[in-house]
Amino acid sequence: MIIQMKVKGLMFDPYNNAYIIILRGEEGNEVLPIWVGKTEANSISLALEGIFTPRPMTHDLIKNVLDALDAKIISIVITDLRENTYFSKTHLSYHDSELTIDSRPSDAIALALRADAPIFVAEHVIQKQSSEELDRWLENLKPEDFGKYDT
Amino acid sequence: MMNIPLNVDAVISDPNTDTQIVILKDKLNLDILPIWVGMAEGNTIRFALEGISAPRPLSHDLLQDLLEQLNVQLEKVVIYDISENTYYASLHLIQNRPKNPDEVSDKVLDVSEEQTVDARPSDAIAIALRMGIPIYATDVVLQKKGSENLDHWLEKLKPKDFGPYDA
Image (cartoon, rainbow over all chains, first blue to last red; front, side):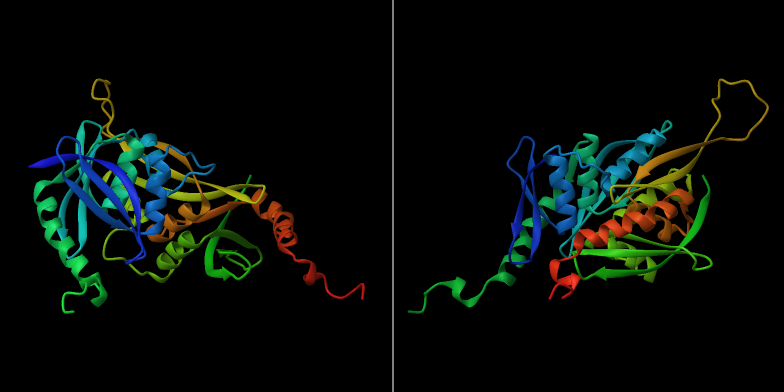
């Protein structure tokens, strides 16, 4: 089962000095946060805001290469989550054939936004994510976060 | 216009700015072409230069995978212009596609078509290094860079760099 999601926003995560892309279900209330680096976040934010840079950024280049070759991004699917790493696949159509390429979600999302392609997430990723995320929050907790239960 | 083959000699940090400089040299070390790139772009090129591969495909690895799966050859990258301190490069792709089946022909050969795609030199160099593709600069760029680089240095000079000549 896969769920279509949209990029709802980008946040800065001061704990991990990274950025979080927030995906939200098109119909339901599923939320999927994905941690990405600064360069990737920057590329995604340019695409979200529809800003054209004077020179092509790396994902613009990839999109331009695909356009020149007449290859089209059909969709991207975030397929798995293992040890805090998300895996995704980019599906393309090229001369009556279809091909699938392994990619990081940050690249896949940056390309999907530029190509107006839908973003899908496998349902088990969303389920897994809620438990992995709990681990992540627990790791970041400091003693003072636990409050004053022993006073 | 003539294309001169260049090698990536080094990536160095520019202490004056938050950028890195990619140093390209010709085979005889007669011509040096320094190109200023961003921090992230410089790191990507450095990884490629040192042959470090990331556990997950980075953006340029993705581009390489795409080209391979689409059966497209990257023939060369060319740094072909410089204007107002901005370098322009292009990727030269050779696309092999099957002949139109409706076409009556006894040749079985595929049709090869060359495509050129505009790129920043940092992307062009990063992908060329990964794929072992030759990097060229046009003679025009190598001639022009002399004066453009001087401008770059002059812009960055601070009053104290001029020394105590009026003291």
